[in-house]
Length: 417
Image (cartoon, rainbow, N blue to C red; front, side, top):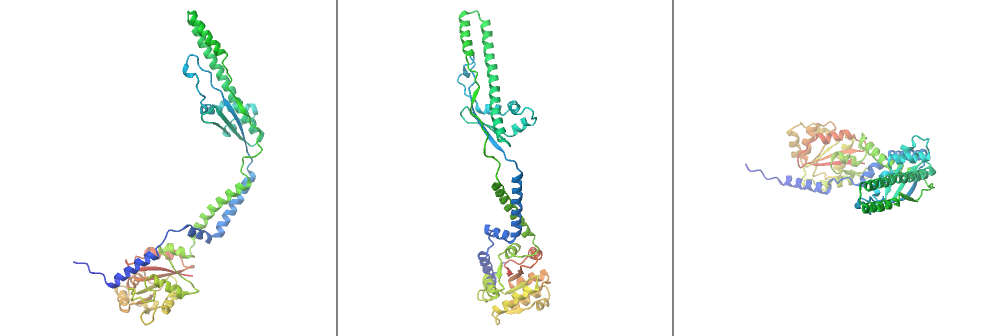
C-alpha cells in the first residue's frame, strides 16, 4: 500500500522546524559562557581565591629558606693497563663517575668531614644532592641544597673532595695491581731481554700519575636563597584559588534548586531559549513567533495549527497567553484558556477540538496531565514551555525528560526576565 503524500501543512511545519533548528541551533558553551557561569557565583569564586592566597602566604612565612651551592671539578683519566692496549687513550665516562660521586660511601665520608656527630646528615645530604656531568667532557658539577648557606658550600666541597679521595685510592690500587702483574711476569721469564722490557714497563707505571682530578671551581656560600619568595607563594595561591573557586562556583551553580538564569534553562531543554523581557514583553513574543515561522503573527500561513502554552507556574502561562492575545490577529486566531482546555476530555477529543478551531492558542494548567499536554502540543504543532528565574530546576528537568513529543512538534523554551 502506497504511503500517503504529506499534506501542505505538514510539509510547511517540517520546514519551519528545520529552519528553527538551523537558526537557533544549540552551540557548545564558549569560554565566555563558562566565565558567565562563574561570574554568577562571584562571591564563592572570590572567597576561594582569598582563602588560598592567605594559606599560601602563611605557608611562605613558615617555610625555611634554602640555599644551593655548586662545586665544579674535572676528572682525570685512569692510568692505562700496560698489558691491555685497548685501555690506552680511553676517555672518562662522566655519567659513571657522576653516579660514583653521589654514592653512599662518598656522601657518608663527606658528611663526616663537615659534621661527624650528625647521624642524619648523610641521608639528608643524599636527599639534597645532585651530581651532573657535562656531556662529552670530563667536567662534573656537584649541587647541594641546605638551609644554611655556608653548610651547603661546605658539603658541596666535601662531596667533591671525598669523591677525589675515593678515586685516588682506586687509582693507587689499580697501579699496584699493574705493578704486581708485571712483577710476576718478570719472575716467570728467563729471558734477559724480556725481563729488561718488563722492567722498563714497570718503570713507566711507577711514574704514572695517580692524580684523580681537581676542583676547578669550589663552592662558596650563596647569598640568595633558592626558596620561593612571598610573591611567588601569593601567585601560586591565586592560581590554585582560581581553579578551586571556578570549580566551586560551577558546582554551586549546578546545585541551585532554581533555574535562576536563561542558560541553565537552555541546558535543561537542550534547545535555545527565547527571552521575553518584562520591559518589552510584546517585542519578545514577536521574536519568538518569528522563530516558529510566523513573523507577522499569521500562524495559518506558516502551516501552524496553533500554540500550546505550558508552565509549572500559572502566572507565567497567563503572561504569555495575554501577550499572544495582543500580538496575534484576533480575527484569525482562536484562544482557549486553561479552564476551557481542562474541560476537554483526554484522548482524541483534544486533537479534534484543536483541528476544528485551528489556529488555536491553548493555555494549559500546571496540573495538566503529561499525556494530555503532549496531545495538545501535537495538535497545535508548537509548544511554548515557560520559565523564569524562580522556576524549579528539578520540575522543568523532569518535564523535559518525561515528555516525548511527536516528531515535527516545535518545542520553544521561553524565559521571562
